[in-house]
Image (cartoon, rainbow, N blue to C red):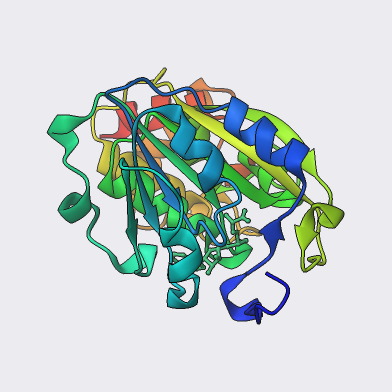
Length: 259
Ligand code: SAM
């Protein structure tokens, strides 16, 4: 890859640390009837390990300059699609009936991490998502109420998944070296909570955090504030609290009472 002109705009920092590649791969354990979806395989550092897993694999890579190198990977169960993952219609490529579990794996540009996760959750039914993220972002995923990083994404992810850190990854593990350290996170599906109306739940959480500095009263003007105040008081809180004070289970309870 010495002569490759790495594109910063595509977040092209390729993994070179074999221990990290092995650690990620060891944490993905599909069965024969499962599917791995790899987003942004790059020069295939991880892909070459994933094809040993004996299940189907589909990769989405935006950069066609990587075609030759990726198509040289020896496997009859791999399908490489040269398209922008954010723009594809996943149901065109994934036959949901055919697979038991779907694993999403990716080491992607950090500026699209949230968009990628939102797409995976809304368009598919992921069993596990194993993803490399910027260290601070990884900490945000599992952060708790009242901590600096807690936001609507923390609530969405903790509502849907168990979140586990797999490994910290230093900048030296990549070529070229990025500015920030990273972390590999595993999100494993685990629906512990029941909400009556999931769409309403997502909207309510998003609206609650709409303006970080504002309290619930100001962020939730379009909701029934009297009823909301009564529910909050039963939880020992009120409308002057900010969204960051509410735990996932409190959000679930509020929404189930409100709707
Ligand atoms: N997985 C490889 C590795 O770990 O060495 C490459 C990781 S590199 C950080 C990110 C890869 O994602 C690059 O190959 C880049 O071209 C690709 N990429 C960036 N945006 C993408 C998108 N929207 N859809 C698909 N691939 C994308």
